[in-house]
Image (cartoon, rainbow, N blue to C red; front, side, top):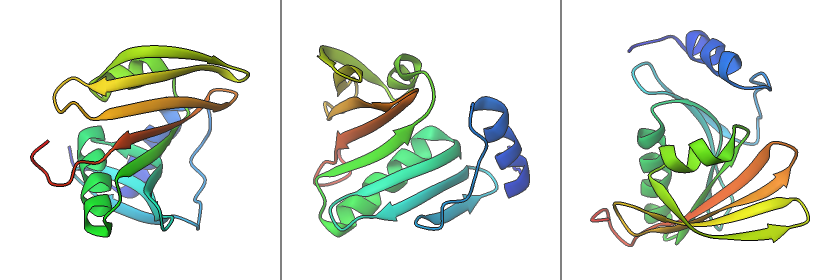
Amino acid sequence: MSRTLEEWIALYNKKNYEEFKRDEKFGLFYLPEKGFAEIVDTGQMIIVNQMCGEFKFWRDVAENLSRHRGYKVAGTICIRPILPYIRLAGFKIDRIEKTNLGDRYFCTDKHTGQKGQASPAGKDTWFITWEVTADDTA
């Protein structure tokens, strides 16, 4: 469905406990049919910050940018319940590790075999990283 950036932001605000607040450290990418994502290149990985829209599309964007830069990993920040997010991403949980901040989930993508992990980063916040394959055959 095609939406304006303002409509995508309103949807983001409806679904998250924190309202969208533009972070200028990240580039803002927007496509009416796909949504929006804030993305940054740290020099070691591509990280997706605030995002709303077609999840798989924005994951593919992060992976393609990572491949282009020669990075082996990509990441995102999640402020939603983590277990549904892991399922949405197509990962299965292999192992759970207890940490001082909560459970860390080690996962494998059910379709590609890519490894990933979701690490607690504070109250209702997770830092998720996953392997990026050498090419798009994954």
